[in-house]
Image (cartoon, rainbow, N blue to C red; front, side):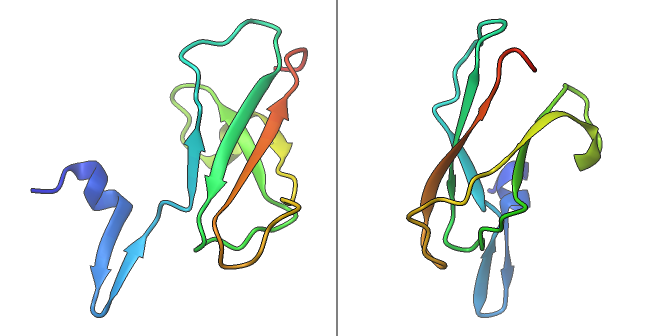
Length: 98
């Protein structure tokens, strides 16, 4: 039986499987040092088209809307990006601002 998270991640449309895992965050540390820069690494799936207005936000526990971010950084366009392919990317949050 599928768990609730599995049900939310994908659903079946006749003849097609829909998957909502467009961005996968990787190398997430257990703790962060106060005042230190934080690197956020992620993999963008082949199903998502990268845009110059993409951003990654930091949210406090309990957020309810995408506009409730604490801080954000624009996501750079990956130099090796080809539409329709998976690509790794990262943003750096400056420790003195977060």
